[in-house]
Image 1 (cartoon, helix red, strand yellow):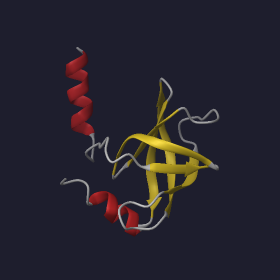
Image 2 (tube, one colour):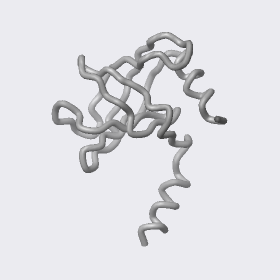
Image 3 (tube, one colour):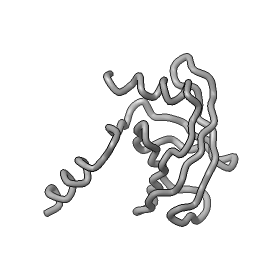
Length: 105
């Protein structure tokens, strides 16, 4: 049953999830390393305060390759066992393109 649900969930994803490179995000003056990420959002562990699904957050992403620091807006999509799923609602075009460059690697 686990695998059946896992494959079904995986098929619904719009974007491939990556575990490397690990991205460093800054949200509310706290730094987080991504558990995984895609062009659609990030997963981070152990957020510094309580969150609810639907909460909106703004943060910054450390440079990716030669690209500079950029800001992003996210919405909390899910919370499970200390991992917070964040769906991107806005990100700088330079960082989006830099993230997209890792898709084929």
